[in-house]
Amino acid sequence: MAFIEKKLNQYGVVDITKNTWTYKRWYTSDWPDDSNWNLVSDGQPVKVAHYGAYSGSTGPQGITAEMVLYTPKTPMESLKGKIVVFRTAPHPKPPLNEKYKKWFTLNDYEYRNETDDFPPLFTQVPPSDSVSYDVWWQLRQTVLVYRVLNKAQAAGGIVVFDMGYDRLAGLYSFPVMPQYNVPNLYVDRVSGKKVLQDAKAGKQATLKLLAKVESTETYQLIGYLPGRHYGTAQDEKVLLTSHTDGPAVLQDNGALGLLGIVAYFSHFPQSVRPRTLMLSLDTEQPDVDRQCR
View 1: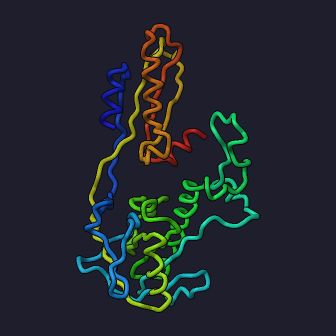
View 2: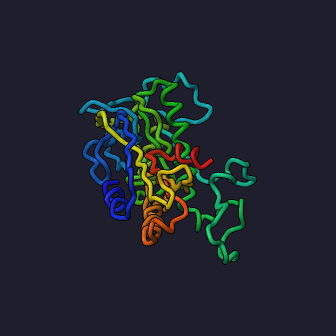
């Protein structure tokens, strides 16, 4: 954001405003630094890929409890005080319901011109092409994890993803749940084999997740590249908006895209720019979505 603001100033953006507020930021060590999170299952260390964001914290010794494998038929009362193990489901089999088709298939393309190179619209994506969408499908299942762990008053949670370690390592939780106090960790399909076996057998595990909470300031950045009528009643504005909470590489670097637009129009004198470009860089995607709608 400091880089963006510096460049906006260079391109002639004026009246830059930071709409600031504070929130409680939860954080721990980030991959590849796993010094604050680890797992031991039935006495054996397990390779952990990442953690459940905002899922509380353990003491330095971690929490030790019996593991239990969750299924939709598991009685909720049997999970209390246990370390609950979840297994994410891969792509559902056809027929696909409307929600899945809407959110988790390749249903749109920018500049689609080589139709033969793409799967049919609104259909299940072949496994060879579905790497990123399979990730989203599985990550969304952590909403169920959050609900179950809280409702059951579990001691902790472990999520076994149907992914390789290199794909899962460092993968941040999405969506991010409100802060809760049931620490959970993410393991890949290889490490997860032992965890699943141990959970089925009711073995004990020790889960450690050390995290801190601090008051942090964040902000929305607003600014204007003036058009010829800027500051008058005749001014018209074109709103350029994007969210800045990342992961930017996966989400098309929206803020940098808007910076490119401003850079282009900055080459024209203000006197020939018919409208003002208003930038609204939001820290949270849903707010931007609402603005766009």
